[in-house]
Amino acid sequence: MSQLNDERWAFLVDYFDPNADLMRQYQLLYYLGDSTLEMYDIKNRRTLLKRTDYPSITADHLFIGAEVTVYSKKCKVVAYADAFTEAKLKARSEKTVVQAPIGNLAAATAALAGAGLRINQLKTIAREGTKTVVMEVVASGAIETAKALGMEASADADAAAADIEMFFGNVFPNGAAGADNTLAIILPHAVMDGRASAIIDAISSSGLEIACAQMFSLGRANATEFLEVYKGVLPEYQKKVIELTAGPVVALEVVGAEAVLRLREVTGPHDPDIARVIRPNSVRAQHGIDKVQNALHVTDLPDDGQLETEYFFSMLARAS
Image 1: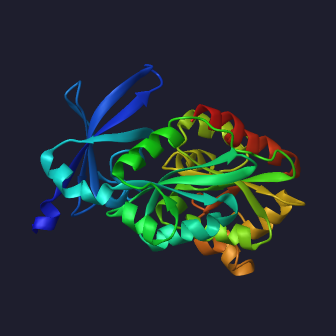
Image 2 (image 1 turned 90 degrees about the vertical axis):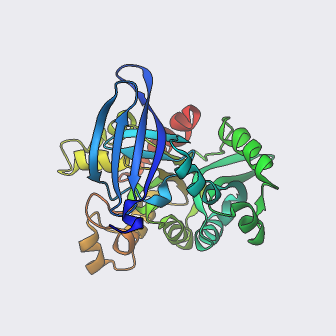
């Protein structure tokens, strides 16, 4: 084997077990050569997951503070598990916080993606009559890169740590409109593939307004509750629940006249293969893979726009 194939990164991850109502800690091992994962239960001294392929998690997703979902277990990376991993990754995991007006969300996320900055957390804060999107971003040299983009950003590493604690350790008003609105959820596969900025731009360019945005990591209970209306209706229901918990999602409150119907037009048919034939410029045609990983969930019925929006931007936002 080559040296690359032998390389292994080790992390400590926390998992909250809702059945036992306690926090469990596991060791997560990532093998760079074949992108496989292995997990070990530290307390009980047993293998939790034998080395296996898990394509939805890549090296870019693993850094301190990241949330990853492994077979419905939502885990937070809390520490390096050995000195080798820390030495290898500490520099590439520099964090900073950037801010942008909600109206500039599409341009800001595109600029960050183009500069190689990965968004780890994102939320909207309403204050003094304005709405600002704050984003925790991660990359090697993140602080200087964000400054070079001309964005409002943390001054240094200490300021970044304080900003992360202040913005993401507290709940702030988000200014969700509550009228003439609908919900869009950029699905985990699209977020992890770096497609969020293009999807946000497609929505903004359609004439609809993005009034609020936040990144969430959903547990199975919330995903099941939110998608319950599709149980017995969509054959892919169980797979949709799994997809919604497979990683972070970006929820968007979209507003405008007839917002529900117009956003559905922008999104395209449920099946991306059909969308590529009859609506080739739609979001699902451009960014969807199949009927489960179809890039974007949007509200189906006009009467449900406010209900779905409130589920994320009122109920879940208060709990996050």
